[in-house]
Image 1 (cartoon, rainbow, N blue to C red):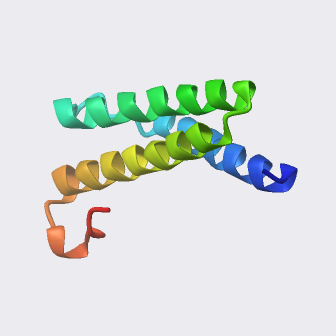
Image 2 (image 1 turned 120 degrees about the vertical axis):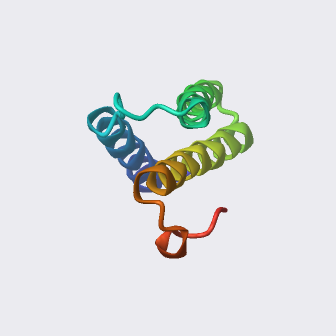
Length: 92
């Protein structure tokens, strides 16, 4: 994987993790949101392990699952808070 591409992906992960911390929802915590957030963290850890081992296919799959979990967590939280499903992006 080209270095610039990998740097871009890791910067996006870093941003997602930082904003995930600041947007943590202590006042509304749904089990499914917590499970999706946990899945995102676990998949990110797996992608790091795969990269260390040089397993690019597993790393790519883990990156994909990480972004999906982050998106689904944000989508679900949006539905909970705003309760306007017409304006929320479709599930992926």
